[in-house]
Structure formats: structure tokens, C-alpha cells
Length: 129
Image (cartoon, rainbow, N blue to C red; front, top):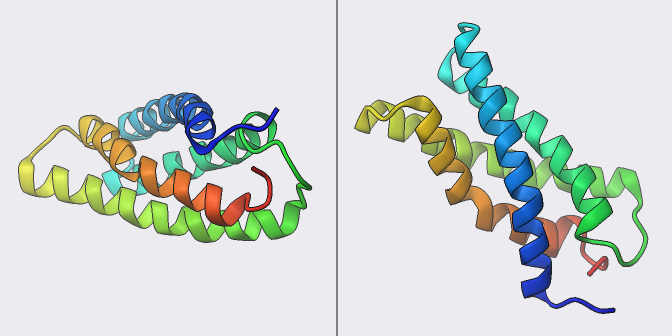
């Protein structure tokens, strides 16, 4: 059964929600361990990104061939841009608006959601929809 973009986005939102929980929880734990905000944001984002890739391959982008290395390289490119956006949002919100870092992280995840989905749909998993 073929699924449209809205169906893929619905599945991606569920996967993204799971990964967002991993991102926020690991971010919070890293902060409590004494790591700086930006370092914690980068590490938690990386962990969530690896989980996101694995879940997307298994539940969202099911059609076509999954050739690991080229997809992984494309994922790294999309993720580095997403990480830059995520880190910038966290930094701006915490520094300029004195918002709690965990709340800033949640806001950053919501802001970067569209980029992450579009990057995976159009670049990482192209041909797998």
C-alpha cells in the first residue's frame, strides 16, 4: 500500500516524538552531570539522530533499497545542518531570553522538526517513499 507524504509525516512525527524524548532526557541528564548547555545539546541530538535513522528505516521510509553507507552520509549532512539549527535555537533562547535549558531544547526540537523531515524525505531516503 502506497502512503502519501501526509502519512509519512504522521509516522515521522511518532518516530520523532520517541526520539525527542530520548533527546530531552539525555540532554537533561548531561546537564545534571555538569556538562555545558551546548555540549549537552550536541551529544543528546547525536544520540537521538542515530535512533531516528534506525527507526525511520524500519517504520517510515520502507520502500526501495536501503544502502547503508550512502544513506548514512546523507543523514550526517542533514543532521549537521539540523544540529546547527538546534544548537542555535537552544543558545539564543537560553542566552537572550533566560529560558530554562530543557524548555529551550524542547522548543528547538519543535523548530527543527520540519527541516529533519524534509531532509530525510527529499535527501536521505529519496526513492524510499
